[in-house]
Length: 270
Image (cartoon, rainbow, N blue to C red; front, side, top):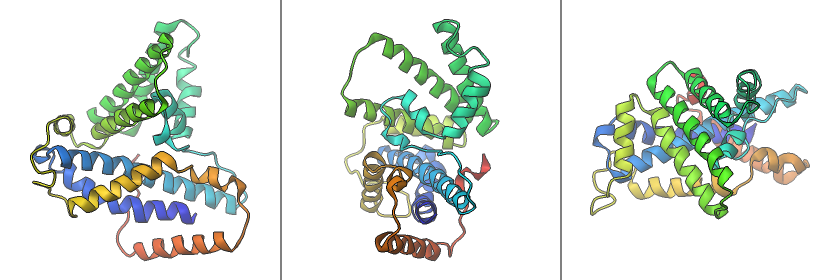
């Protein structure tokens, strides 16, 4: 519970001002701004959602209820197929059992399988909200899953690090549309992300922190999500002791101190 609360109120909420500053002024974002906003939202969404999922699991254990795991280090995925086995695992399982398989799953040929994937991802997008940004987000993931399945048929092995890097970049690009107010704003941010940066990487930033501070935080979070094991995996060998007690109290104390400001659950709207 302490780990989940820390992830939500200390990490995710700290990223919120940076995300809001960039996405509310998409037309004015440059290369570094767009990337900072996209990565900030990528980490904000993950730490917010996984944080409260872990708090729910912890509260269940306090009542002797065992809730299913919802995340398994999704930003360590080496493919889009792998990503959806790690991200929002309860939603993915529900869609697989009650939509993808009833549509025919992979039982009626490759073409029908690809169709079922696309339909499933489109409906996952609509599940998040009745807006074109969510529809496009779902469609993009559907197309990426189709490409991933077809690539597997070629049996061309790529380095694991390259696979993880490509997957992460695809996920970040899709999150831009998920967060953008309109499809147009999302397209402008993506255009800025692939544009050539100006002479000064710190020029024209309009976010409430110095650029060096923003990127130092984002690089640390990138390292955590790319290298550190999921907390539920780390806790499999849990044995009560003074070190765990002190760590839990420290995380809880910092989190409670951070609760002095208004804090909303980002994923509550869904």
